[in-house]
Amino acid sequence: MVEIATIVQAVAVVSACWAIISGVGAWKREFIGKRQIELAEQLLAKFFEVRDAIAFIRNPFSSSDEGKSRKRNDSEYGNSELLDRGYIVVERYQKRENCFSDFNTLKYRCMATFGAETEKIFVETNKVLNSIFISARMLASHYWQRQGRVPMETDEFQKHLAEMHRHEGIFWDMGSEDDEIRKKLRDIQTSLEVVTAPCFKEPMKVYSILTMPLKSTTNKEL
Image (cartoon, rainbow, N blue to C red):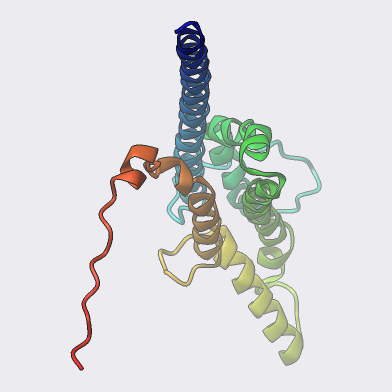
């Protein structure tokens, strides 16, 4: 009897320990899962803000007051209006700067949680933004100033025109689905959705696996 009591007591102690460990493990998994979901929601929400901010920056419609905050100098030689037009993206970026900085502050948390390779999402997003600034600068300081003012041979003019249109396609969003910037943002969004998708899937509990009905099989008729 003593031996049975000892065994029962040992089983009770083991069961209690297992329950505690299981409870702690379940709580830890739930806590980590919740943190990952919160981070995934933040990442997606901030990226959507960035995407909308870029659309705002590239809006082809502007008021006569935009671009006027640019500091002028005496060497502009009548190109102030063209330079102001290119400066519009800077003014618009400044109005939405916070959403870009908020998105970038999530980079290291994202890398720590979902893997170092997710840095590419932030790198590509910043490349898109930088390309808009580069195109704005090139158009305002070079291509628009040469257009119709500098004599060019036919081949040179065609090359100039093609490059100018390419930069204008980055500078302005004309609403086309073939838009280069829109395509890149869609690719970035897809990558972000793939990374965060597991966070929103309901994990299958052990009980559900054990009680899952077996697929019935039918005998083939001879």
